[in-house]
Length: 109
Image 1 (cartoon, rainbow, N blue to C red):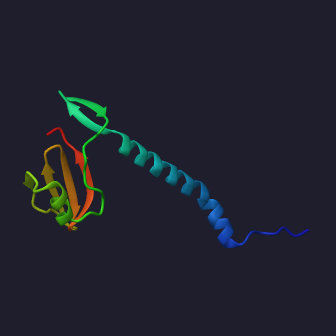
Image 2: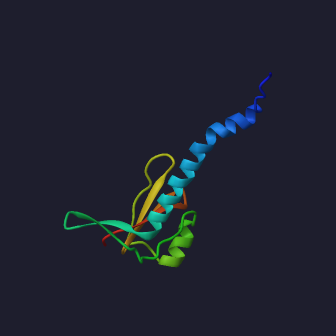
Image 3: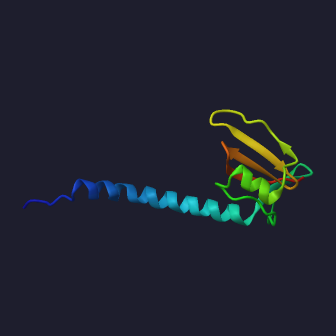
């Protein structure tokens, strides 16, 4: 009796499915936890609190950030390749790659 083998593409997909599911689960958990809380340091103690601070979303341009939030308190020079720039506002900092937001974090100030 001859055994039937699945096509190569089906075997490859089946072997990658557990890894893909695990990656998707890890990504969704990371997004959910990032959306619910901020990690801060108070009196040298790390604490987690809800963040009610409005911050720009990923992908927004520098000009859009400045139009919505006003001029930053501090504009740091770009460093590295690709160039990463940080703008500090009262209560949050924004990180740009070229002219697009890649991350915004709540700060104690």
